[in-house]
Image 1: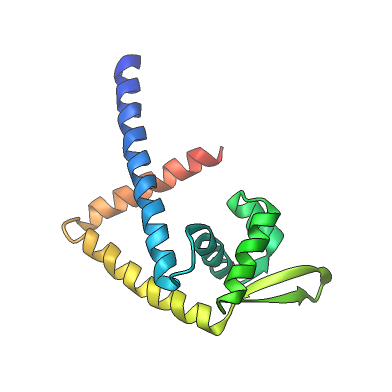
Image 2: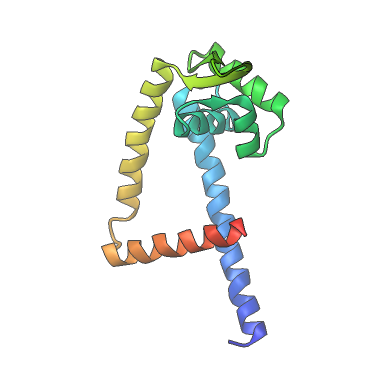
Amino acid sequence: MTQPAKYDVVRSVEAEVLALLRRARRRTGERARTIDPALGPLGYQVLAHVRDQDGCSQAHVADALGMDKGSVSRQVQQLADLGLVVRAEDPADRRVCVVRLSDEGERRMQELGQERRSAYVAHFDDWTVEELTVLAEQLAKYNRTLEK
């Protein structure tokens, strides 16, 4: 493939990735409001990360999501005020605050997860298993490339 042709294809890939990211941002906001009308997209991202990690420190959240510690602290405070997370001292290091989903936070995230999975399955009704396999492999390859 010639450089100009590759450049055009890469621009097309970039456009599709940007469309995907815009859609993901919009969906993140929708999911946040489904959890609680007062919850914003950043709070939802923190909540989802804490769930994915089965609890973690606020510093870990900040590092993983590329947020400053003050923003994470404010988001965790809002999540605690909404009854979605609980905070506790890390027994190994009392200076560290570990954040975990509350029972209510876990319940709401499970409900949302079931809805989200059903929607994903519906989006791919017309796709074959082979097409989905190729998509998953290519997305994994792209993500590995971004990690370099």
